[in-house]
Image 1 (cartoon, each protein chain N blue to C red):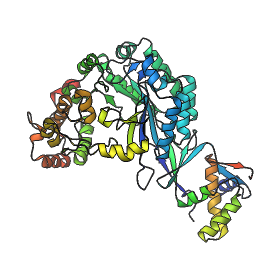
Image 2 (image 1 turned 90 degrees about the vertical axis):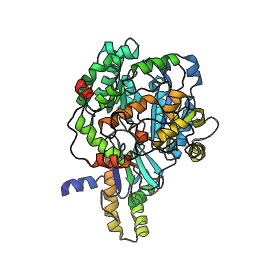
Image 3 (image 1 turned 135 degrees about the horizontal axis):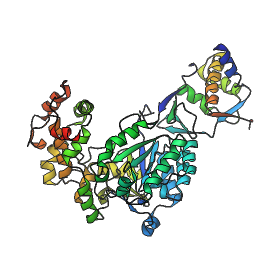
Image 4 (image 1 turned 120 degrees about the vertical axis):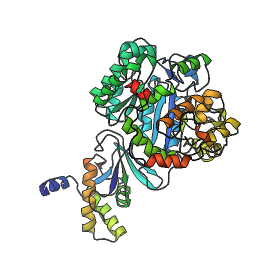
Length: 110
Length: 408
């Protein structure tokens, strides 16, 4: 189990820039950030949508073409007044899942 | 900070609302892409011929539909259902479908399946509608199907379309229109529906058919009336799974049955949803096309309609003395399908009682023990007590109706 987690972590690099993929549509409806899959295979079920909570939303909103994941972690560390290594663990875990679901892609820094 | 896996909530698109807060101005929209249809079903309330030049010419242009889809999404709409007529008749269907999905909309589709090509099925597999495609079946064999659709070759075409979806694992559900040519095929249909991979409940049937929504053909209306099940026949079908029916009705009655009162719109029509017809006219629901309920989107916006026009419309009160004496005082609201749309289709007004629906509701109420033989629901004074007694009663009545026995 631990080995699997490590191998998944290897997919996410703090030096890399990630952005939302074109396989999803991100919508804000009545203050909620909702991710609507555009293509099949994003959700576990064919009709699944995703509503981001405040933390997920804060991370998603920082995914532009300019910031590496390390930049995102540092900004969130300041925002939440929490140690960067704690934030990093959370952010990396979240990014692994988004990457696995094809909700984000790697890009070159703008 | 939270741990992995707690950054979002996954929800089935067809289940509970994804939002915790207030509802958007527009939650869902029906879009009739065409009133034209390649079938010519004997009971249809809306269809125009597939090759009707004038109807096609009047239909919204591609860019006009895209503008409506964009505005719907901007108002918070999450679901736009493509319906018709037959929506797949439009040559720009794929373009509109992809455009709508790229707006972040779920796009369920109502279709007869006859025009589902391998390419279209592949598109649905790659870019899913996010809700099951809904297919209406008109018969379980060529003879009965085409006696309803009145188009030779439509049975084979429907099967071909269905097989395209099956091959590509595109989720769909099937509905059945119960009509004289196929009345003996209900069990066969149910067995087939149950065998489909995405069927998770009993299939739905349409049987209390609506008259022409544009009130455009007296002759067709006479035919539709002849095709309708009698209230007793309808009851027999509704109560085929007797225990399930009664269990569900106990819950339903305790929640939804009460007197309608003089307000015409006790339903959700025009509140957070609506239907755009093929020509750009917004209606409060799929069926209501009374001029007083129509808002022309070529002259105004969805926002204006939802913010101003429909809130005003929803305050309309019934004036017809017959309605006020019967429907307004009747406690079978919920059980009865009487509404402004049905009144419009049957009588051309918003507030005229529809006797056929009244009889269907009374037949159900008698079956459930809410009414005695010969009683009229609007004359019952102790209706609250009757609903309470029925909702709380545990044993299911043992006596089966003669109608049900006959149906079995």
